[in-house]
Amino acid sequence: MQETINFIKSKINDFKPELAIVLGSGLGAFCDSLDGVRIPYSEITGFAPSTVKGHKGELLFCEIHSKKAVIMQGRFHFYEGHSLGATTYPIKVFKKLGVNKIILTNAAGSLKKDLTPGSIMAISDHINFMGSNPLIGENDETLGTRFPDMNDLYSKRLRDVLFDCAKDLNIDLKEGVYSALTGPSYETPAEVRMLALLGASATGMSTVPEAIVAKYCSMEVLGVSLITNYAAGLSDVAPNHKEVVEMGKVAGLELSKLLHETIKRI
Image (cartoon, rainbow, N blue to C red):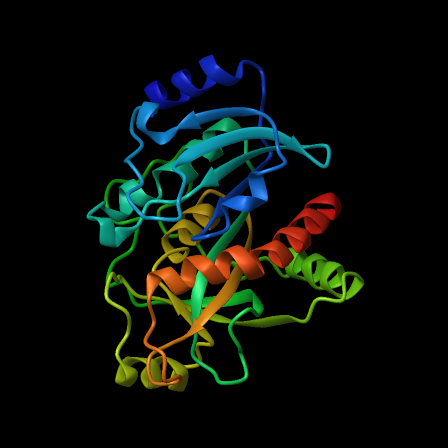
């Protein structure tokens, strides 16, 4: 950890980020107009390589609407073969750098007919179906307590700001529960029906481990899903990653606009 921190600080000097943003599949365009220090994951000690198409695989340190931020252009996934500790390692690094708020975005499949592709969903809570927890193992007391509370994991305060911004921008923002499975295979129609019965609105293969670690690190968390497709059984079209990336590029423009306005106000 200290090697990672020292290396990053050698690149960013006295820059101290207060906000972290994690961008999901196809959402990299959010950074296109931003200038700052870019560091490829491949150069950072302790960071795994990002292998997923649609993920650029670099950190961007920049000022955005007068706030100092670090942006992950692409994330690490459990299905790539990384441990949950490796997938959430950057979140712990951000905490050590001074981050106290984090925005987690993802591309997700809809579990409900009325949550149509192209919709934006504020995450109100999650269901962890990944079969493990990123906090398993020896605890680092400098980061958080051994048994962290998960109430209000997805900050109601930040969601209220998000909804106010959506109203002002005339964006039809939805809200729901996100369920995370390991992937990389998409869910079966039976699994989709199960998840919907349990109260989930959307499903994906990320975000939940990062959110758990961020809450453990006492960060305020905002989670946002871009609904890119219907999950299996809800549509005649089988889910596929190309569709996810393409929808991310199209509908991601509206999400980018919403995120920019939200960042101004938080």
